[in-house]
Image 1 (cartoon, rainbow, N blue to C red):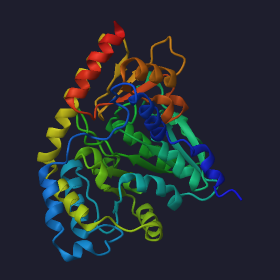
Image 2 (cartoon, rainbow, N blue to C red):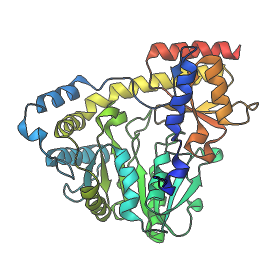
Image 3 (cartoon, helix red, strand yellow):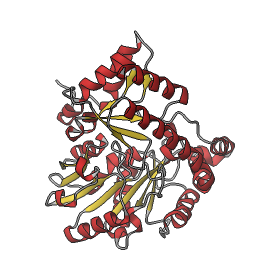
Length: 382
């Protein structure tokens, strides 16, 4: 008897797990500088930590939490969206608090798709988009993001019959950003063709220059779209596992119905900390954003000096780089880079076939490590 679902076959090697394996092998012989995984090295602000500690003394903190999220946190999200995006949400209809946005991203297709429905997603992209569609019994359809369009989705590439469309701007791994005009056009198409847009907005608050937009700013978007937000990147709370879904009330209710059977709510103390973070967004997020902006700029220069073509389009803490012509694939270049410099980068192909030919560098490591990486890439060039 084989105790394994056939659905697991194509997911037997999760991209980030494979990166860890290679890193362990190399670290046995040399110092490794890990620029592969986007896990912030900056601790959450002390105000957020303090809110969690204070909450631990309250008896209700330790009871079963609400599936949709504490009302006080959801009210904070309502205020945040009104102040940040000029969007009015209804606290009981448009918001579900999540055990990290990954939980919501994986489970949304289970709540939306029937077996055989088409779920489309942009590629290169977060592998969980495809995985969620597959495990829901949907038909996954990748949509390529092209260099000539600065990795912005071409709506003409959306497959006919799509029921759920995953997009992600600011984009991981390419760092691409989009305008309100892009969102307006996509919302109009969704109305015309009858699909639900799901935007993974995990990096919305990591921007350099013009603030990122929410798709929900567009008139009519609430009828055809949901958006996933995360506190992981904005406030350096990756291990805390807290995010939220906002948008279309029917989709949110379908998701909440599923959630009641799959898991529980977020631990109450974490929700109190999340409330503190969101309430103090205007003072807490900007210093973190500035750190990433500085790091991105200096790493872009280091790659330019080394003869590697690279970009950050104004969002995320990633740099998306084209591999040198002499290398046949992203994996080969990453292996070479680790062996010669000790620098770990994520091969673009780990985010889908359309990512081959590129690598992603994450600037979520201390300045001393970035300086060491700069010295290593300089020696590699020489």
